[in-house]
Length: 348
Image (cartoon, rainbow, N blue to C red; front, side, top):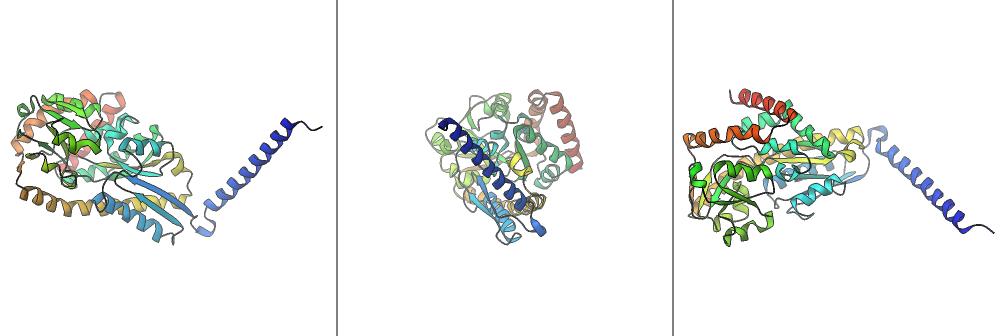
């Protein structure tokens, strides 16, 4: 009589053999015979709303991928955190459930600490063109390459704009105005310590709960770029909007590293091309829309104030020692020095 356990083992072996054959076939197709692209679908998730600059960039990425492959490669975009919270989307990308996501460094930092250099306060050039020049340089690529350690492939830096302070009762014009305030930040030790450096308190509040937290007085204020303040109507529950240029909300477009490296060379190349096109479209859109957002916020009747160069310098002097305090490993200090040199070059 045949042993039942033996039958199970034989059946399992057959399944493994069939699976291996299928994977072999997929691999052969994936190489793109005669230069043809393989049929595949890319899942792209982000947290910004429809028609935001970031979403416009994502749609441009989709357009390039689908047009240049005659529809063999399709891209499904999930905006507005449809695929989970910001952190959940990073986690899903790390384990391969999402192919590409666009997220701020603060939520990537728990996975790769080195990326927090993007969040250093009063560190980046005040002019967007200079900031982009640094981020798109070789040293910008070095920053992206730090993501490899977390199982990610950094594709590029996408725009979100400069962060502003907003408060309910206190106009912020100097660090002493921060004393006693509680500010909402993303879940990032660097951002929490940044406010301690200025004399304020900071607490993490999930993105979806920010409006209610401001309205109910759980926090006195928060930091975000113009488009986020406008699209989420934070100016309805905040009386003071301060254009401070204290930090940049730069998004990182990243993929699962193993997924990307397993793609045929021509697909990898096309993804990088589409990223460039998408990023450029997002930056152009943001530049055009920020003027509209700013004017509509001003027209709403809130106190809108832009820090003077002299006021910025006071914050900057207080913030500079903080950079090496929090970005302090041997490799981080080395990278910090390179970025500072590139910033000087861009601003000269």
